[in-house]
Structure formats: C-alpha cells, structure tokens
Image (cartoon, rainbow, N blue to C red; front, side, top):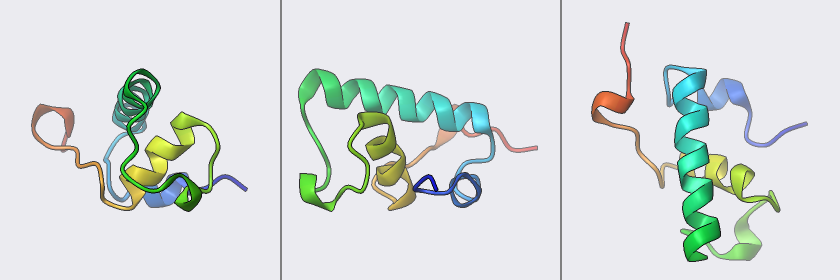
Length: 71
C-alpha cells in the first residue's frame, strides 16, 4: 500500500495533475538543496517524491493561488 493515500491527498488538492506538479517541484528542490522539512527518520518513504507527498499530507506544503484550480 502506498503512503500517503491518493484519496487523502485529493482532499487537500483538487486535481491529480496539480498534485503531481507540486510533488515534482518539491522533490526536485529536495534533491538540489538537500533540505527536508522533517527529520529524515520521520519519513515513511525513502524516495524524495514520496517524501514530498508526505510533506503535502502533513500540511508542510500549501497549494495556493493559480496552482489551485476550483470548479
């Protein structure tokens, strides 16, 4: 089972496409800067893309403005 659940993440972000975009940007930042918002042992995932999704789920990343599309 994947963590965090996509269903849970889609309650935070309205679109799968925005979710992928935000996670990709944050993952790239982690790789380039080696900066994490939590202690490394707190993450469930080993890869940065999963860690980015964990940060989004915990509210450490917020999606605002033109990134969030409401219908």
